[in-house]
Amino acid sequence: MSGTDELRVNGLSDEDVKIVTLARSARARTGAAEGAAVRDTDGRTYAAATVALPSLRLTALQAAVAAAVSSGAQGLEAAAVVTTAGAVDAGSVAAVRDLTPGAVILLADASGTVLETLPAGTP
Image (tube, rainbow, N blue to C red):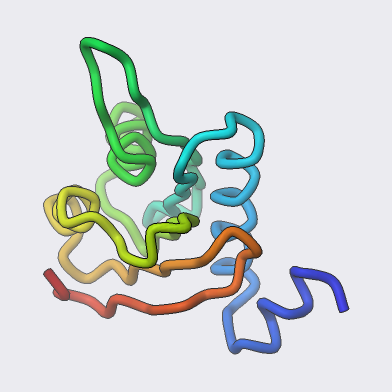
């Protein structure tokens, strides 16, 4: 069974599987600690990895939200974070909630297995 098939078995929609896959890809491509992806209310997706520059620090999810906002997104449907940290950083959750309090946030491990779903409005 492939990773994508395993994600579907866990009950995720195809669109949620897509953002988890994009988040995994962003993390793998850059070697960053985290990868994230968001889907806006128009169905467009944005992926990013952790930004750790001397003058700029963003979690992967903050970077993905920033990419969406800078591209004109008015809201988010869902977000996914792939990390080995075991939790979504509070600043990351806040970035999503600032734009759309009702967006679901998926937390996945490095293999793409969703460990937790933070429902709408969860701080």
